[in-house]
Length: 281
Ligand SMILES: CS(=O)(=O)NCc1cccc(-c2cn3c(Cl)cnc3c(Nc3ccc(N4CCOCC4)cc3)n2)c1
Image 1 (cartoon, rainbow, N blue to C red):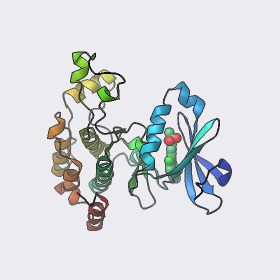
Image 2 (cartoon, rainbow, N blue to C red):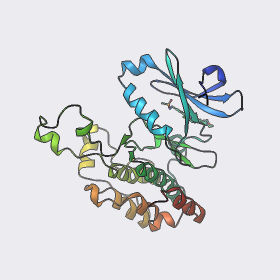
Image 3 (cartoon, rainbow, N blue to C red):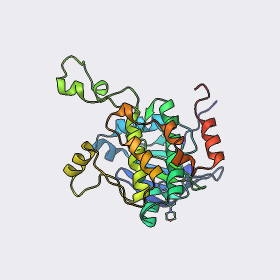
């Protein structure tokens, strides 16, 4: 069978949806079938200048193989001499962080629904040995039924690849401080779900301060406080994720089954999630 070679001429290009550092995202319609998509057009010159082409290749490899209702689909990609174009699912609702800015903060049912969906999507990624590593409102879009769509896998990696292993060359010459640095594992995404839940409920992340140094200090000391309006259930969930020892953090299935999340998430969403996880589990 002939693999279709895509070109920009296959699309009617619409308004720009957003401007990014490496290029822009446009609303577009595929001419033959009239399917509405988002085209992320990246300039090779920009990618090379910022030395991120390997990251883009990893993003393409990873996102092209993921298929989940809460992960933005990448249908295909193509390139010409100057540009790389990603053919992406169009997220009708726009950016989640704009929604958060507009509403200041989300109520508990909305926050719990979003946390359930993000956890379900990340759990699916982890079942494929993919760690996202960059979960934040800026990387989440909203779909046509108000569901969240994790986008932008630019920073994700395949599990088991700690920085050490992704370093080229042998381990023998690494000094002790390089050996002790923690391996990346799925638990980095558990922590991010805790930060995301706090930011949904409060309107700003738990360790936010004026300077980078202070933020690092507060993360290291896990020093954060809850405003009085955050319920006991939400505090319990966040407290079980913002834990220093990665092994002590609850995992994503435990997040989805947490009483605070379950109390707000409707039955059919739970049934769908249990179907979407790996049947061999
Ligand atoms: C670095 S970057 O270029 O990748 N990110 C910058 C950026 C900035 C802003 C948006 C979007 C964006 C991306 N999308 C993708 Cl990918 C699929 N659908 C959308 C998508 N969809 C979308 C849908 C609706 C709206 N509206 C809704 C009505 O109010 C105005 C905004 C905006 C974006 N938006 C992207």
